[in-house]
Length: 99
Image (cartoon, rainbow, N blue to C red; front, side):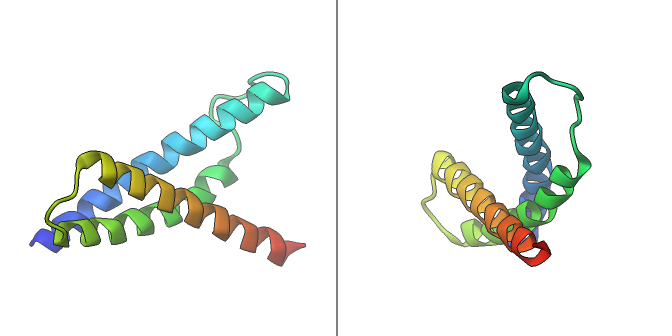
């Protein structure tokens, strides 16, 4: 039951944070490019981050449910950094494959 709860919490956080991070990235990129043209941006950015974020946060949810002394700050930091790096890595594979 504890592992299932960790997977579900990881799934929810991964889903939510993928949209938040994609929105922030899109908002900053559009601002630097000359102005915000759309509030939702390009849909490929959301599709590119949602699966890696969900998988990463679900795996980390299982991992952190098995750990005893994990602070909330460490949990969020490790989860966010690993999700961003996995998304970056999978994006470079996709860019390399399509070139």
